[in-house]
Image (cartoon, rainbow over all chains, first blue to last red; front, side, top):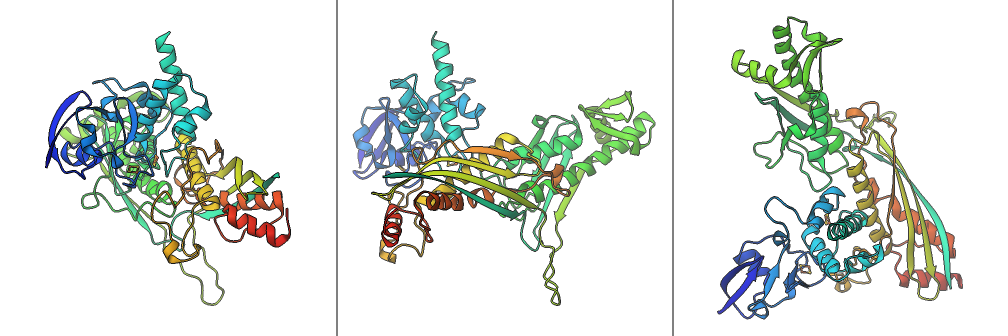
Length: 158
Length: 332
Ligand code: FES
Ligand code: FES
């Protein structure tokens, strides 16, 4: 057993892991942060996506010990009490989530995109989300949601 | 060379279990403050039945759907629903919900009739009020009626609803049968570009038009059409299913091999809602859940034929299958 210290959504945690524990297992089974979903558990679907120091990663294929001292963001960390993040607002407004299983990963992938490119084209959005599978919503309204959030965030800045 | 083609797929599809016999129940309870609790066994798997059933109960009771709380979280305590399949929930659970809401409304009419000294048969429920038809000044807020029923008249304002289409089997003499709740219709148009050197098929456009009866919630209906469309694109072009792979050892075992379409494989699906109300559905609704995943694939396969003149008879139309078919035909 090895001790692991990390920050998730601004809060520090300390826990113990083995050499094989994944970040996804730490988040869900030890810290009970369940927005990252176990889809394929093999790096193929993106439902387990989280941000590590603002970079999008798949937590199911991220060794927990490699996140020692790092800052992790899950979708729970985007909203403030009483205020959703514009991406969350937009997914709600534009019906970007049907069953919602892919949604936390989609929103974080979109956040990583907008951090780099605040004015994306639809094609940019499609490319940025191409590693996140959605089985039920058909992607169109997800892209609509990200475009709407980008516009809203752009306006808020000006 | 890249060649373009257009194809059409058309289908009709029954709502509910063919042959009937699939039942659903619902309970609508009007709280003393006039808000409503709908309890149903219908499971929301993302298609939005919690919203749609709440809308139906609200419509019957003349209130906003935000005033309806839906409880559908376990099969022990909730009334029975046969399940979320067979494109049945909006129709079958919808009818059960409407039945329950009407029965609860009848109790409100009876109570309001006593309070307003009017005949319960002459009442209506609109804009959050129970009123005497034609005299809007003789009306009471629904909360006042439900409160008086609960605390004054010791009545529980609850409606229990049910719907099941009678099971039907073919007549042994004639083969005649009337098996469906209702039928929905669809037409889908696909435009593809086929690369005759690589066999790759690029889907450029997909227009999906569905006769949904009445679109109870158009945004959710579009979601169904787009989501089913994406599944059908996978079936047509990339998702290899048993027994179509070369051998069991080559069966896909992960999502890297079993290729669900990504954002890059799906165009912006154009959903067209065509409303032709069913004569017997709740508010004219029909079910389209499943057919949205059935109709696009044939349109895509027809479009491939239009583009390069080959019929792909085994799904999905992978580059390999398209190239083999082109070889057999001696070129595009
Ligand atoms: S669960 Fe991590 S990529 Fe699928
Ligand atoms: S909303 Fe259901 S998987 Fe994306």
